[in-house]
Image 1: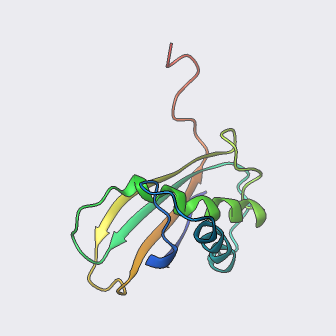
Image 2: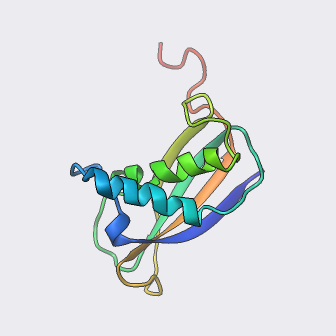
Image 3: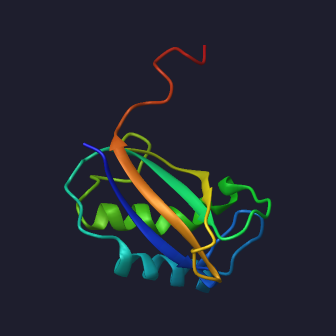
Length: 128
């Protein structure tokens, strides 16, 4: 079963992997997710994809936003959607560019979080 939800994340809560975000910002972002992750049906294990929609066409590296979504995955566990957040239960969050939309409010980034049934990216023995 595929499930998704969309949120507008204030830029002040974006945590990038390019710079060492202060602990207070990471904490504030994690707390913010508690109020915005909706109730979803339990899946146990899932692949988590995050499509980013920005207001402008400026270049950026979507993978640098991955730390922003750690709190989202934690909250999915807390809500009982996922059993745990380790690699045997979750692949991701895999962050990618989805679109440019002038209707995205200023000073925010829109994210569409999609959960799909868990599937390992690599099969046993692929890396040998």
